[in-house]
Every structure is written in C-alpha cells, then in structure tokens.
Image (cartoon, rainbow, N blue to C red; front, side):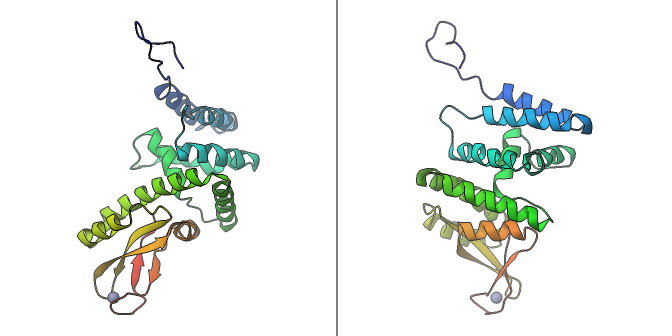
Length: 224
Ligand SMILES: [Zn+2]
C-alpha cells in the first residue's frame, strides 16, 4: 500500500506494473540456462506477492497450487517453462495477466505421469478451497471455456440461447457437440470437473459423443 495520494486520503494500491515488470525480468533472465533456477525461484516469490488485498478466487487457488508445485519441485516445469515458451513462440496471449491465467485451465504434456501429477495436485488444491471459492473459481473457468466455445460454435444462435439458460450453474458447462455425419451443432451440458479431467488427459483429442439425431458416434466436443 502506498501513501495516500497527494492531498487526498484514498490509499493507492501499488500493484500491476511493478510486479509484472519483475516477473518479466525473471522470465528474460531464465532464457540463460545458467541463471534459470535462480530466476524461477525469484519468479515464485514475485507471483506469491502478487495476491491482491482482496484476492479473487483464482488468485487464492493459484497461490495454493504454486506452493504444492514448489514442494514437489515442479513449479519451474509446470508454470515457468510454459510462461517462457509462450514468450518464445507466437501466442494469442498479449498480457502477463493472460499468460498467468492461461495456465489455470489446461496443462499440455505428452508425459502421462506428469499429467497425472498435475491433475492430482489440481484436484487436491480444489478440494481444499472453501465452497464459496470453489464455486467462484468454477464460474470463472466456465465463462472462459464457454466464451471460447461460442467463437467456435457451428450453431452459435442455438448455443448462446442454451448457454444462457444454465449460466448460473457453475459446476456444469454448456458445450456444443458437432456431428460430422449430420453436419449440425448440438448444444449439451457436461459436468465441469469431468470435462476438466478428460481435457487434461487428452488435450489434443476431441471428446466424442453419440449424436442425438443420427445416433452415430460422430459428435465431437472440443477440448479447450
Ligand atoms: Zn448426427
């Protein structure tokens, strides 16, 4: 907290640029392999200090899951390597906030044991959250996934109306299945945690369901 603004009494929060800048500095230093470990360790402290005074659910969750990653020695691999790689390659992510947020939903790995560890720690952390934080966290992730679904929907008008009906139920997701046989999009609901688990295990394969119309196993649901 900084001193009150000149002539005013409102306290000013000193978050944002300063810590994003520190994190960026750590990321740049980590390009040098000899300095990587130290840079990642500093980045951990920066990320933990970024918690707002009244933190959002995802910040509370991140702070807890980062602690577990660090204790298991995978913080660098699970978080920092991915942040560094997204700086190296073309990415739709434009801000550090988005970069940090993008690591919340899905963990892409071809190493099954690492994928399992990630999901176990994710589930363990999730169970430790209060019911209120759990609900807010799921709602936040639901909004993000459904926004991506909306942009990909083959029948967007049908999808958005269906999505609106269930918008308040944070433990369920509204997705669209696209039948390759009928060439039609069908909105449907899935349990959030089931979707999350399946998506993390097989991030590159769509989920396949039976089409309600032609009854073939030809309805594809994207994994985001
Ligand atoms: Zn069909």
